[in-house]
Length: 346
Ligand SMILES: NC(=O)C1=CN([C@@H]2O[C@H](COP(=O)(O)OP(=O)(O)OC[C@H]3O[C@@H](n4cnc5c(N)ncnc54)[C@H](OP(=O)(O)O)[C@@H]3O)[C@@H](O)[C@H]2O)C=CC1
Ligand SMILES: CC(=O)N[C@@H](CCC(=O)OP(=O)(O)O)C(=O)O
Image (cartoon, rainbow, N blue to C red; front, side, top):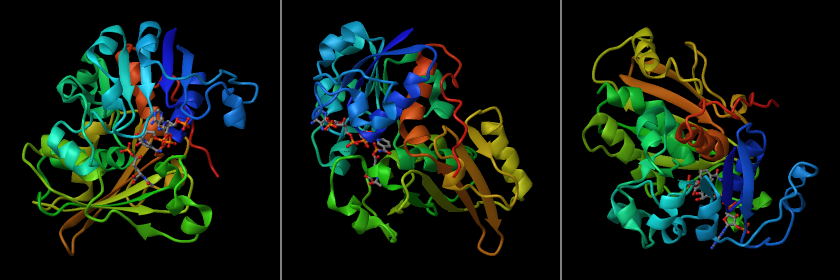
């Protein structure tokens, strides 16, 4: 059994990790940490775990935990992991960070977009960006995984084949994305109070969202040239889900079937990516609770643009599910171990 510790287990991403790992046949949760709920049973915080998980939440001691756990998941607000992770922890165990601290390779870009100091820039080189379908060979070699963000997972997977094949004009990319409210986490904040966000949809952090440099970093690597994108996130009054609608101008005329062949080249064997048939487009409700990323596209002959749409569950493929997929890769398990949840509907 893989001994697992979860630091920040009481947030939404942490809860989803517990839900998935409790059903994972090869994992044993040995430690759940919290800041506000030390001493409380997990099922008292999240009653869905009544009779299933009564671990007591502990005060975090990551150095001690690293001596006992085979892998530690960090599900903390950004800016904390870079203070906690150090070479001695990484000598003892593997770390999968669900936050942003080790995703951006250029520390200046991180500090500028996150408006905070990075406390362990020397570890950035050894961290691997854990987008499983694209980086699995590097993930296998690493002991520090930067689990991608939710908007970014959906946007990068949707555009990656086109960028890799150099098919889009690099100045033309627009990602217009929507998120459910759980994307904002469990901590209280005015914008996510029921009355403030229900029955309304809004764009936010326009031309300034922190996932912009993360998407640019990974698409630039695929394209082998620095690109810039316009990225606009929206808050939608639903619990879970990301829908990313991505636009780009095609460099050459292609048929729908040509484009599908390109997507199949990269994703046909990927069990968590579902390429949808012509005329069928992703919806968040069809991936809810699962680790799937659904992708569909259309060609607009009038404008020469391709429009690719991706959908994921922000808490699963966008966070905990992908983190467990990374754990499976790190430990040489089948990638879908513990991750075969069928999307829940309604
Ligand atoms: N929500 C989502 O859809 C996604 C989230 N992520 C990332 O995952 C991470 C966690 O997000 P999420 O679960 O939504 O956030 P939450 O706010 O729901 O949870 C945060 C967790 O961190 C703990 N925590 C908060 N501050 C501190 C601190 N100063 N020291 C130690 N522990 C602390 C909280 O403990 P306590 O409850 O005891 O206060 C809680 O367990 C973030 O980096 C987020 O960006 C990534 C992709 C998607
Ligand atoms: C709806 C909502 O507020 N979403 C969050 C998503 C960020 C997130 O989850 O952070 P990661 O970088 O770790 O993915 C936001 O826009 O800040």
